[in-house]
Length: 296
Image 1: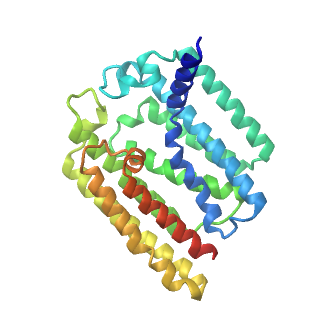
Image 2 (image 1 turned 60 degrees about the horizontal axis):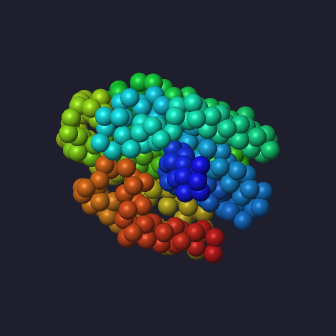
Image 3 (image 1 turned 180 degrees about the horizontal axis):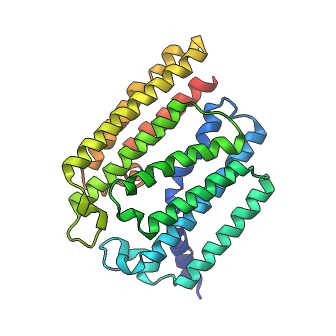
């Protein structure tokens, strides 16, 4: 195998693992950020190790899903280009990757001396997504609920790794906005579908239903975020105005996101974020402002 063939094959394995989707797992780090202990060296190390474990676990789930859906994906205009569906990576080789990643996760957990609660969340996330892959993704509302609770589990796992409490308002913010992203993705898939070979579950959805639920959860998400910001503000008199004034920026970010998903996109939040530089800039500015408010 030549040097360029090796590089190409490495790229295929990176695509197989969906490395660009690791951005979702930043939620694992949010309990550390909001706990006020970001500069605690031990908690930072534990949180980063937890982030690595969750990233590798999510790759395992993506690979298992691709193996199960390989025949269906071959008939999909976009998914047919995935490594397993296209045949660039064989199923046995994909299973070797799954086994290798699992061993790495076990080794990292042993090194971290991960507590039982954290292991429980990892196991629950894995089982939930195996159920999704085996058929729950074809059940209306159940499919989006599994995706939404997957985001919530990231936060719960992140909190359990470093043993900190997280505001219930933050949990509700993550859950409701995850529903917003999920219904938004289904909405755009429904609009763009050209045949019944895309997603079985889309047969049970209508655009009106998805629109209503999508924006209902967006409103709830912004409301819960506002309540969280007030709760944070009451902890320090000096930060009352600063924290609350992040709410308009959140509204602006989601207005821009809504414009994007009304365009030519399948509604995948990662793809939308990575392909819109202005949205990425807004999110980066928000992150910097929030970090400044909480720590400086």
